[in-house]
Image (cartoon, rainbow over all chains, first blue to last red; front, side, top):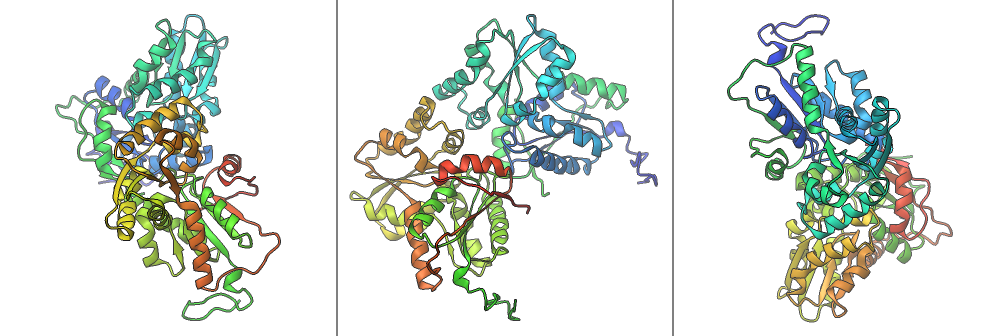
Length: 281
Length: 281
């Protein structure tokens, strides 16, 4: 292995950058819905996923703590020699993406910008609703990203702190979940939105219930597929696409309880997960 | 300040042990219900409370992670020169108390033993229900502590992972909270219990709703007042009671968001909280 003295391009000539993995992190399970889309759209790429399950959830913690944890996660993945980093968590994207861009020398993609892009693409009446964690909504990141693209848009946001827990307890069909969603959505429904952005990577698992409560005329959008398209675009631009590969294998790390992650995570990823490793950091 | 070479009794002669504070830790807010009882029963004592709000909740994390965090919390409080440590969190008591006793040279009290003591004292038909976090229930700690005192007792346990979040979102009166409690309690009700142990420091805030769902003939017990009585007994035994004190002041530390803790915590403590400090550890 040869390294340049400058530290730049410090990879071996025998290990082209394009052959490296794409890294993703999330506070826990939700980022697997983003991973699912990337794997689907970029079947030759190998991914490495880090879920900070020891310190989850991030959604109701302070910006300073989210930034600290995001830096820990990024360092862990960069030490694994990745070629691109996806912040597959809306709360971390909202609070920490700018700081990560300032610190780390790697292409970085979050989920706020792709979600905003998608919402702007589908709205007709320019009245857009956003659901997210307390942290994401308080940051105002979605509103800013939407208005940057469509200044005349009106954005109505609702913090939904319980939805992550209801999903993780697998109460997707419980009447209590419906009641709680109804309460969260009510003020947005009253505003006549035609587009509702699911601004947390857990919410796609509640899509049917949310659609049912908001009504059939409102289009639901989430960040996952647009984020995967952005990953594809950036890999092309940077000439980092991996050559065709018959059996890509993915790696999974968590900071707590690998067995539980393997069990619960398959519901988020849409395929079985095995070989989850414990991340000590 | 003089210190003995052995490290034992390493306090100054000018600072009697009895004048030191009682330390308490919890993953976040719930331990304040225990603090409330200690302050009420021991009005001359000064307390120092640590809430690990950056890494909460503990209830659904692995024993190894709970032990690690509990050690961090204990070290933080011992550095503040406390005379007694209360583990004011059922999950941490269930998983980490034995390890903390092994490591630290200080009187230690958890909330499992006091809760079990109280349940055994009030049951008539020896059929006792226990509600707790996943971690607490999976540990079997309450069942073991009850059967140690009353071997013929039958113990029926239910993990209630959502109740902590519903309390922290202040949905005490929401119909969804009632539906979720009804589901959790149903199997215990079917067993004809006459005593129900609220095995998590958050649950006393849901006491009315739980009583309503389990019915008026079942006695609810929680650890807080028995834990305070145990603190009193131990202080007497060790001659560590503080002399009469007109205006004891308490200190509060949290690992994330002191303002939020001051705001939300007053509901748990039953009095206003101010001067919350950020704990860096």
